[in-house]
Image (cartoon, rainbow, N blue to C red; front, side, top):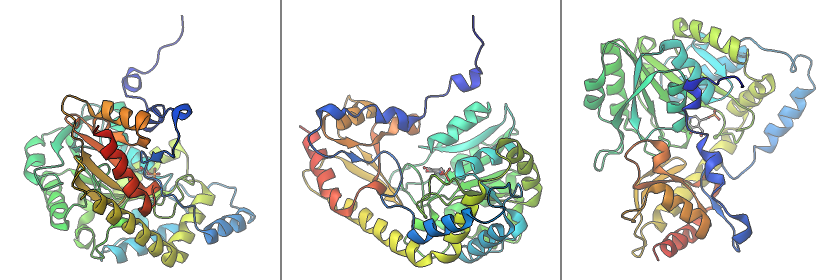
Length: 389
Ligand SMILES: Cc1ncc(COP(=O)(O)O)c(C=O)c1O
């Protein structure tokens, strides 16, 4: 006889990317795998950032805890950066540093929703969002995130699902898995809906830096009372190629951050001190590096889009942007997982099936192309054509 596990955790699917990696059959391969299953840029962190980390490692105090909300200089730098980027008004006290955006999501949701509550979550969704909601016994109520040629959810669909137990609408833009960048007026309308119904709009903006348009992603931070209904989540992982450092942020009212503080204190006390220094350096000293990398990623996206115009290709790109493309496969009667496993096992392409991102997604695959060079996109299309038989 042994001890029981928490059924709320046990019923959650195993981490998807780990599972996908088991589909590759190393012994059989005679050509390089195109690994497109995870949104991690192919380049390392900036050399200057590595030097800075080495420098601060030797300073007295770097090995110690920081404030739960993070080092004041970083909170200030995030407030300044976001105020500029969104042409809005954010104070340092409204910023909390986290151990990555996943922790930012976890703590934010835990601060506002209890078991039995619900949140509105467009499908397809980022799987860690539903995994966490499931663990908390918070119901995810789904609305479609792709409607015909519009790859974003409709405000009216969300409005219909809100009831007395709804605590939040959760969006992700630029979206994982679809790459879709929601139009600013759509995001603003979701904010107005949330505010009018007394719930929160939580937006995961991990990929905001990878947009081509320099205009603000939305106008929420310029509204005088954004604090009433908005929670903004961000990640330093992708933009500074520092996924392993674990640094992200929450921007919210000081009222909500007061609740978040208790959660973070129990989870990890603070984000790793040295990672906060790395994030600060990135925000304040790596602008040129960041711009160059974003341009490189943009060229990869354009190369992928160009590749998908090949007439013999029967896969169809439904939407794309930032680090992702969402693609419809041509195989009637095959699930997305069967197609993805076949691509991994026989055609040296590893990508994730749409079914990992929610119900009704069996026709789709997610291509996370950050790991592939622009020159690899033709090879990808060659292999997709090959898979058509
Ligand atoms: C939408 C989204 N949010 C959060 C994360 C996790 O970010 P972090 O490394 O900052 O925890 C990812 C990583 O892929 C993501 O795609």
